[in-house]
Length: 154
Image (cartoon, rainbow, N blue to C red):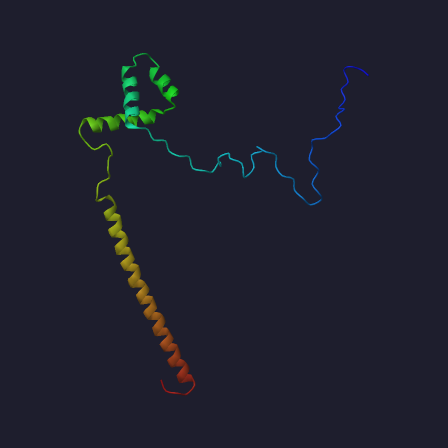
């Protein structure tokens, strides 16, 4: 026998039996099918949150960095985006001015929209009541016409 030729002389087979006609084979483990533990591509990613001391330490690092490109290096090391820095700097400035850390919306922002919806709801309710009255009137008129055509009195 030529040494470059290889033969498989194993006496046992590790393959599973072939599925019978009409049966579907099970997917291989880790084949990316439903049921494995990989995240769904349609799942909404969870938003990260950072503790306040961490934010302050990163901002201190960035303020102390003087070399060109140091900000980018720190952002890459920490896995952050420049938008994080913008938000965090505004947050830090609000705290330093003595304002609340979280900026709340003014109380009246949603109120105007709410009142508009209440007025629209009342208008539509009035229109619905008028339509119901018209239907009742049509029913009565139809019954009266029917009784007149039969020769009776209304």
